[in-house]
Image (cartoon, rainbow, N blue to C red; front, side, top):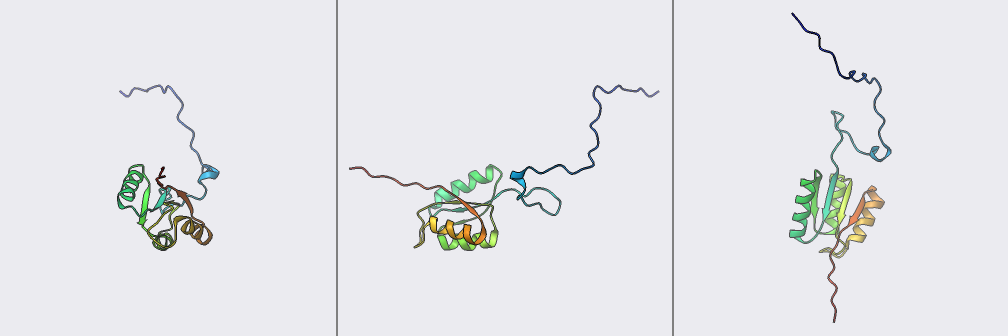
Length: 125
């Protein structure tokens, strides 16, 4: 004999409309299955150990690191090829061009914004 169980709560209504996307998420790309693509970040840092620590921390936090560049020229080339959503940019780089110049080029040519993260030791007398 089958017993009927009484539900404590009504089951949720079936939603027939697609949910509205919040404005902050409108530019997030979707893959072919309709899932949101993880945020893609390019690291521009000429100190290998700092770059490696940033890469590990970002990957552990769920970001996709699209590459690591040590020079402004390499950053521009990698950004064009990999199309990151954001660049973490050191200001002083191992090249003639600095991170500020590279960030300006990336924004003007590809619309990619940069977050500056730099270490500058001040000397006192």
